[in-house]
Image (cartoon, rainbow, N blue to C red; front, side, top):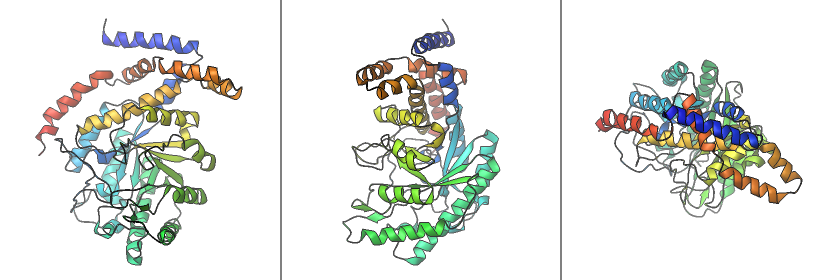
Length: 420
């Protein structure tokens, strides 16, 4: 029996089994195809970027490993992204940081313009995908003190205010040209290594800088602003100025998107539990899906319990209100494999979530029948969701299961291994 026939047969069996639970697998596949995942460009080059004096990440961000094939320029990064996307089904976007500009001449970050990213816009337009964007408030001499928008120095704060607003203008133009709204996320590494005595002063400076930034109104049709918190980072272990509580309040007050990053909380704290609460007070949120191992270590996303919980909460609370971006950087493995593993794991989790008999589960819970709810949830874990996702890949003409390995190996042998 041909592999395609086996996959189709497995899908038909899965379709019948889910139908017994009142679940339409075709509706689930149609919904999955409409949930975009934003692929993060910085996995491809270990967060170095293409500034003329690029020296690698700082500000508590660290990519480890020296697997061959790191992208060294825009051409290589785009080729790698094209390869990864050729292996992925479903709706995709690309998430850019400001350090990935395209310029023959040095440009400081407060002077960035849309022309420095026009080639990225054209690249995305050719592929029919949207772009998301981020100011890069780290890896820069004016971030060396550990403070940017909350710096005690007015001139430092002004530089970063100008940088963020330059990025906001670029984001709006990205959205206008592509006809696909751009989400721009603000994260700053500001904080204290040791215990501060005046946290409030730094947070007031951050608030005032953000207030100055958001005086500039841009059309929501083309771009939306998000703000991202963090618990701690390397060098700022005792206090992060932009804490979760700070940004939760600020996003609600200013009607911004709140970005929840999987690695930016206490080790036993999970973002899956926060999604429903955040959506009670905000019209949309942004997720940076990562995998922390004991700390914000940004491991490649795999299909673990928390990823499934995140996907289930996205589906249960309306995927149209949740923007999904991946955020990790691992230089110890093949970087194409890192991208494809993260996206496919996220899609598998979303697929399983979409295959829940949602109405029945809610009915059991509302009636207080927690016994049957528990038993049904457990039975769902053994249902053939993987067969449905395999069919999703097959129908999109993408490799199914282990068939994804040979093209990645071939690309490494022919392309990545030759980069030194």
